[in-house]
Length: 148
Image 1 (cartoon, rainbow, N blue to C red):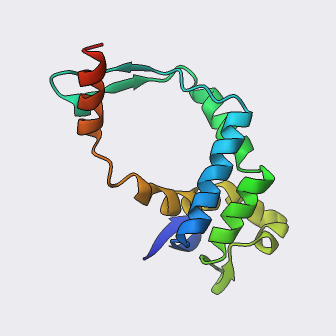
Image 2: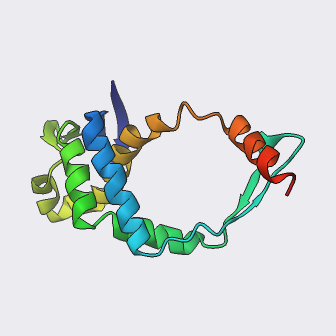
């Protein structure tokens, strides 16, 4: 399914990639984050009356942003993003271009790297989470551990 989004004066048309290519991206992202010692030590405060109102108190927001930005330049992550980006189109100045390294060779286009790649990643990874039922996951955790 194709989606169009405006990003910094560009029109980005994204298309979901093949399942195997998406798994390669997910693995590359996981490996890169693990290599950097990503610690999800956020405090979770489960609201037992309404589990969907559960709060996550993340004390490491700045660190997570820095990690996400550095991960975006890891070669395996970059390769996976460009493999998926090859199916996407950037409309700029009346012309269309593919999301590929050549587009970012132009210095004025480099400011678009992270916004575009984040969209490519979101379009391909978010569908994996749509089927998750947050309420049942939280209630299941409560059943196993009791109220926190």
